[in-house]
Length: 177
Image 1 (cartoon, helix red, strand yellow):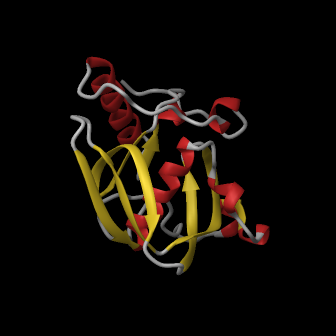
Image 2 (cartoon, rainbow, N blue to C red):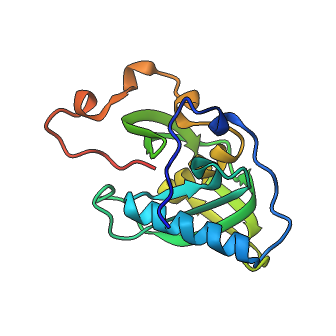
């Protein structure tokens, strides 16, 4: 089922989410299906449970061929529950991000360039991956939602934050989260 995505300003987006304690349950499986349906409907690269009003530490992400991201590398479809992020170096990389909870806007956001994420899949199986570039950016953006952080809170230079049509008049939009 396609769910309403909360928009920046809704106090539920600022809350810290709770860990999942029951895996492979009908409730978790329904939440994941609703998240997949909602993300696909909006052509998103990722979605966090708090964005649809569920305060659990659950994110999904993945990018294949997507009109919103024509020039980015593919990111495998991932369910990441109770995630842990570990930077693999101190190197940061700035890039454009947008968000389904902040529609119509982009911002220039610093993120770790390389990281390891670990957590659980929907069946409760632990896994980890080492990633970089756009994949690392998407994972960081989505996990931030679980701690009540939206990308504008990470922007350092507000001359590089604004509405898409003002930042990129007559241009194709750059890749975003």
